[in-house]
Length: 486
Ligand SMILES: *[C@@H]1O[C@H](CO)[C@@H](O)[C@H](O)[C@H]1NC(C)=O
Ligand SMILES: *[C@@H]1O[C@H](CO)[C@@H](O)[C@H](O)[C@H]1NC(C)=O
Ligand SMILES: *[C@@H]1O[C@H](CO)[C@@H](O)[C@H](O)[C@H]1NC(C)=O
Image 1: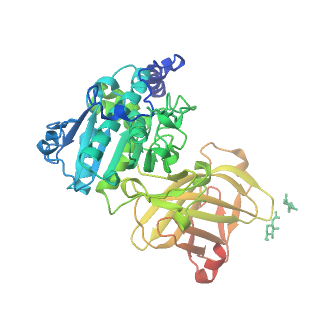
Image 2: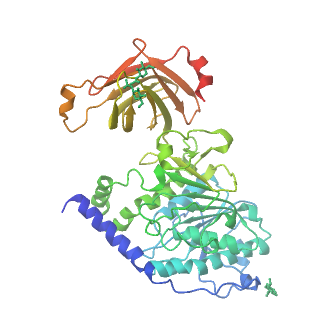
Image 3: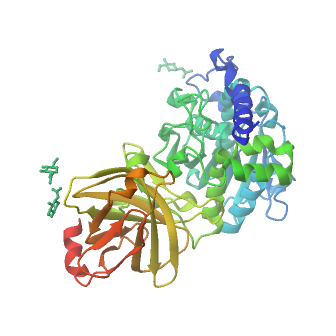
């Protein structure tokens, strides 16, 4: 059995486990609260636990805040003057907290040392068959709403200080809680909200922009048809960010995961399948702890357009930091935003749009051509960035996206190489494949600088298939050209 087959097998087992039962309606486990809010102060049936974790013991639940019991507030040293973060986990196979929980606690304390960081424990209801656990989000959401109401009314704690963070099913729990609470909460961060059972759900039973003053969402595992995708595909917040297109994350490929099995053992198999899903959390943690290396995301209509480099604008709130410091813009329509990342922390990359016009005397068109680009800057260089250009056509301009994981600083020189197809093609023998290039126009997403490069030797550079690198340097007329660039 090849590696691909093993991988498919793992994924199918996982999907069968998680999705197979969606054809049967999820049992109704909740009575819908009436328009009276009396139920909000009935603490007798709360099954969810609220643990105030400390920076000293981020792994352990040492003190529980119990709705209705004000003495637990002082026992746990809940500080009413500072922000509160409420972390809500998702579905679990093991019935234990996953390792990301304490990592997120630690990262939040690193950024906000004085804050109250609360971990919601609904492990019992979260370790059922997926559809059962998914249906339980209503009851858990009610429990969390009661908790929020209790600290808001009982302690006069301002709702503006409450930030809920929910992962997977926990994102919908956060949404339901925010919706039901008497006062809104300030912010809900949805970390790859669960897809199965929620893709077509109404706003009241899933995360939606109505659930908090500001709702931001990271989508990291949205492969497959809607309803089958582990992470929800549709936008559910004010700002919805789709790193790497949102479907699948770098570093979660077969080779990396096989390595992980080898080092961590088969016990972690479900973790491996969840690699892209859980990446949403690690991207958020990255934004907390690597403050000086913040990733930028850009508003765009689709990942295809983004991949052409056409969306690297920061005008009118079109770009934002990803994660904790996301720009809190509430537009009427949800803003879908995109970015590329590295496969490991720190995740930040630098984005560039490259525009190149291909001159030729004859009409020729090439499809899916492999190119290599090297970017040389004042600080560093990034060599041999590979990409496949969908179309190279005579007298047309191609636009594509390039990323560099190193900060090369201000660009000085750019080199371009047209590789030969890996498959040997006979036509190469008698047909000279080349384009003439006069200029490259490059826009940096991170600095918003636009620079024009001209051929280093002569008016045109001759880009030959299978040939040498051709070089471009900053144009002397760069400044004059800049205005035309728009
Ligand atoms: C619920 O709302 C309806 C109409 O909006 C009202 O007639 C009814 O009295 C309300 N019930 C409670 C318990 O407030
Ligand atoms: C492409 O444009 C150049 C310069 O404008 C021109 O000389 C050439 O004939 C054009 N090629 C074709 C195939 O039209
Ligand atoms: C190249 O194609 C364009 C548009 O298809 C056409 O107008 C032009 O005449 C062609 N040029 C040559 C040299 O064949």
